[in-house]
Image (cartoon, rainbow, N blue to C red; front, side, top):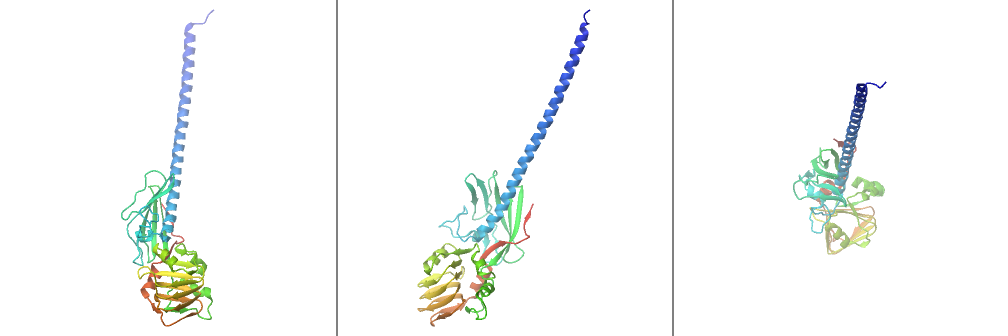
Length: 332
C-alpha cells in the first residue's frame, strides 16, 4: 500500500527548512568571521601606521640634533648649497642671543622611494605629504639659556619631544689673552678645565670640523670657515702665514692643533687658538680673543694680542654641540 502524498510533501518542506536554517547559520558564521577579519586587518593597519609614525617622530628628533650640529650652509631643501648663507642652526634659531630664541620656522621631511625629502623654508611652516612616513619639527625656548625643546610630530598619530642643551665650545674662557699651562698641571686636566671635556671627547663632538692638514694650513682653514665651520681641529703642527684673515667678531673661530702653532706675518684672527706650543714672528699678527699653549709660548714684540670678552663669550654661549638631556624625552 503506498504512503499518502501529503506525507512526502511535509517531509520535503521540513528538509528544506532545516537546510535553509543551516545555510543561514553558516552565512551568519561566515559574516561574523569576515567581520572579525576586517577588524583585525584594520587594527593591523592602524598599528603599522602608528609604529611608522612613532619611528618617524623619533627620527625627526635625531635629525634635528644632527642638523643643529652641522656647520654646512643649507638651501630650502635642507642640503648644503654654495649659494646659501645660513646653516640649519642659524636658519631656525636666533644665534645672536645666548638663549637661542626659536625663529618660528618649522622644517619637515617625508620619506619617498628614494629616501627622505626635506624642506627648510626661509619662513613659515613646511607641510609634509599626507601619505608615507613623515615628520614636522618645531623648536621651543628652553627653561634656561642654551636649552631648547624640540618637538617632532608625525601627523596626528605621534608627537615626541626632548630637551637639548648646548655643550659650549669653550666652557671656561681663559682669564688672560695668553694662557700657558702651569708647570705643575698635566695637559689633560689643563685642557678639560678650559673646554669642559677631555681632549678626546671634545674632538669627537659633531660640531668640530676635522681638517687633515699639517704645516701651512691657513688656506684650508679659510675654506672651512667660509663653508660655515667655527670649531676646527688639526692633527699636527700648524703654521698660519699672512696676509690671512680668519674669523670675525660675529663668528669667531676656535682652533685646536695637536702640535705646535706658529704665526708668521700679518695674520688677523678673531677667536681662540690652542696648541701644544706657540710661536710668532713679525710682521705683526693680530689676535682678538686668546691664545692657549700647553707648552712654551715665545716670539718677538710684534704680536698684537688682546683678550676680547665678546669673542670669548660667543664661544662660550653660542658655539658648540647640542646634546639631548637624559630624562627629557616624552611621547604622546
